[in-house]
Image (tube, rainbow, N blue to C red):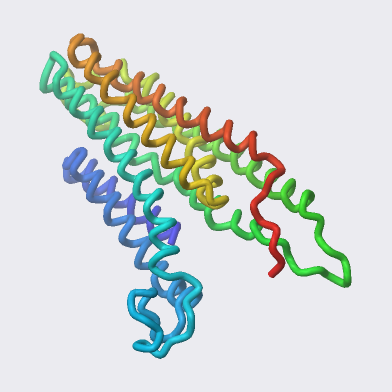
Length: 300
């Protein structure tokens, strides 16, 4: 699923944004297609693993379907899906608010075009960062349940939790490294090679000041992605949703002030970097508070 979604997203961004010059619309279409590809890839394995034969996902009584009890039903699915939907809405809203602020700044249309270039580069780079979050969501659940005793020896719960923390630390290290490389790449394109993404000299000049704040936002997205994936895997969904609601609520007033002040579009991206830093600190703080306090304690 991760492979399919990443390939579709990167290929779609390259074709729609660079070849067909569809800008933000192309990046959004590529992201949508990537999510659909990843979802389709998971449907078969998920049905075989979680649903009994003849299952209706709990929407119909078992005496109607004649099936065995499901490992998951509509209630448990919605309990997970509602906070995750809040995360997605929070992300989409943030980019929408940023674009709205950029559209109201002076120097149009170069200002909005420069913003869309930065946004497209960020969306192009995002799959390389989000994949680490998906790795955390894929492998960390194995640490939520203690393994069966081997040769009469039981597994110490504290040591099992420490192993989970070590795995998260390795993911964070990889995330920081990948984030630094991605930040350097997207920042360099805007600062030194803007001709790759636009031939308009006015847009190039407007986009260049965005290099540092775009790089900062991309870099901070890496620890955010790792921490977010870890908290999802550990079932900290309400906390995640709360941070997204709080940060998304704080973003519009700041962006409105930037728009009213008529400053450069780089201020919008400084605001985005601060938005990512806010989430990164709160997510990392939650992980530190819960360090060594794994939720898994049941035996398979």
